[in-house]
Length: 213
Image (cartoon, rainbow, N blue to C red; front, side, top):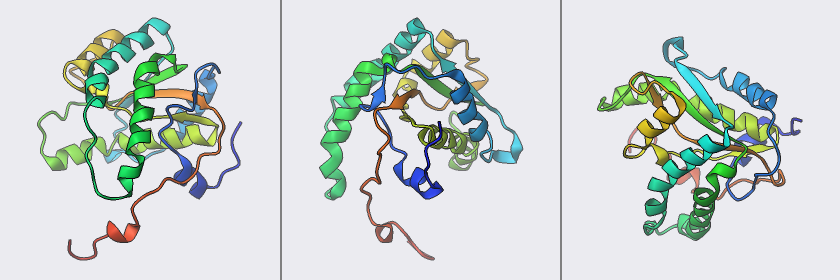
C-alpha cells in the first residue's frame, strides 16, 4: 500500500525511525524490491551503477550484525553529546534515547540492509571521496523515501563500520571486503503509525551563503 503523500510531504516527513519501528509485522520481499527499483533510478557517477544491496532476514545473522553494531554503539552512546547553544540542544535527550533503543533492539527489525559500492576510497582526497559517496548516498536516501511512501521506516546508521566492524560484517555476509565498501546498516520495518511530521531545523537563512562565506 502506498501512502497518499505529495513529494514535499515525503521529503519533509521521512525521519530516522527507531522507537516506532514495528518489530512484529513482517515486511514482504516484494515491497522491499519495489523500493529498491525506485532507488536504482538515483544518479550515479559516470552511470557506473557500482552499487550492491545486501538484505538480511536470517535471525542469527541479524543478531551477529547487531552485536557488531553494539560493540561500537554502546561506548559511543555513553559519551556526552556536544552542546551547540541552539534549538538542537532541546532534542538531544530524545535523540540519544531513540539511538539507545535501536542499539539495544537492532536485531528485532524484520530486515536489515547494507548498501555497498564497488571500490575502496580509504585515504582518498576530498574530491575523490565526494565523487565516490555521491554514487551511493542518493540511492540510499531514495530507498528511505520509497519506504516512507509505503508506510515503512528506517534509520541510516554507520557505527558498525568503525574499527574492525566493517570487515567482520563482510565476513559474516560474504561481502568481498577488498572490492566493496559498505555505506551503512539500515533497519527496515513498518512503522507504528504513519503520522510523521516536519522536524525542527535551523532556519535556511542561517545556513545559506551567497558568493562568499
